[in-house]
Length: 597
Image (cartoon, rainbow, N blue to C red; front, side):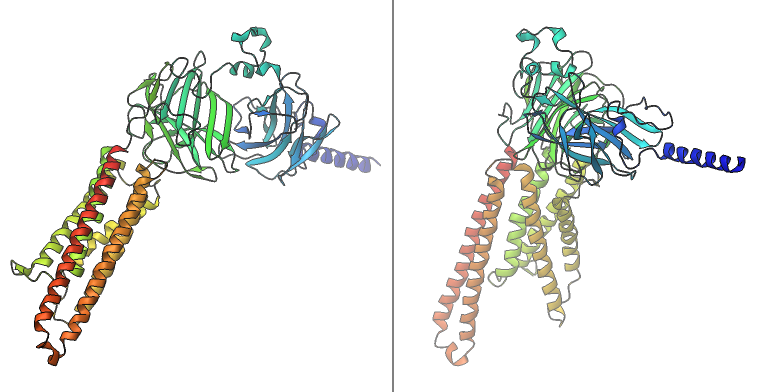
């Protein structure tokens, strides 16, 4: 009947509509292998820059090599579906096969080759997917290409990776200077191979900046960057250095952090090396920007060393607007976790003056450890807790029963102890203030152990003399409570201060031998030896005093007792003087090291 036929037509129309709306949520999109275009209700690809990118684990390959390929977002967006392929640069044919390692991915049969493409398994939202491409033989340079569906009607096509170079490709062996003609280099990536790399061309064909100056890139302590004009507004940048998180270069109008254009080469959430563009607004984590017009030519992580090279046509901006061609260059490195970078491990290397990044010169890093930080760690914290604080604690513990004279109605040992500890607290406060002056306030991005321990030391040091002002009389029954608390708090402060110094010295000590850190370890051993000797001396003295307490023996050994007491006092003074000389030797060595760092 008419009603039955109408119901069937409506049902068929509904099924067709549902299939159009849902598309291919299962990812079985083999019909789109050639065009890489989804059929989504006549929707068309977005014309804006895609918020996605493709990262690869290597930049060249031999037949049989396995290359990790990651499709990921470059902002906080996500995607529901995708189609990923490897295509020959010349000929545009699908090449190679994929190994499926991600549960959100599946292999597809394209061009009668199983697993020659990769797609999604469901329409769940994703921020990245990973697969392993197995390189075939007999192919030239390759690019990975993807179509990415953000949601049903919003998708981008022709998302491309950098070119993966075949070691057997003849175009990789010639440059225009070696006889190749311009028409032979039809792909722009082939021309990039004529650029210099590493230290080649430094000072003659490109600008280079390194620390130590002129260092060999094979040296693990060498941090390097270069810039090379590519014509027009394009620059090729390289950077490398030893790091477990990231290496970064910054362009600044001055030698202070803030209003700086930054490129970061570091590990992402999957452990792959990627390039990020960022802008810093002060002593906080930089704001990550869209990568923009950047073409990545190489990323690697080898033996703990991170390296990147890329070509950018983005205008360098230091005040959120186009700036001049002269900049201070920052070269920094630091840790990262799951793609999130943290404050650099040490003060960045900085060029000694503003430089022209399109010039041909090679410069070395200036001393980027500011004098304020050197005063904080060196002249104040080291002297406070290696010299004045240590000597003041020894006077209170071991010499109070040796020096029995008084000054202004107080025991002289107490006057010396009070003087040394007041100086120590004053030095600690000054060092704490200098750190804040250098950082221009509390740096919420800096959650380093050195900073946290330093704050605890400052708080405990401040309250130590305040509590001492309210100590009870020596003759009250509760005096022992104060004595124990005062001594225990002093011990905690000393241990934490030494730990903070160890962590601080690591910011200055960049030598392979870490001699400053080892010298600090020698000081700790020297101080422990002095305490052991003074404790042994005190134990012998106490033993002799117990013998003297026998009244019947007191008169018989009075002359001998005076001689023993004199020898023990003399031993305490000698140990103290020897310890002081060694103490000063360690402090002077470390101060010289910090000054020359």
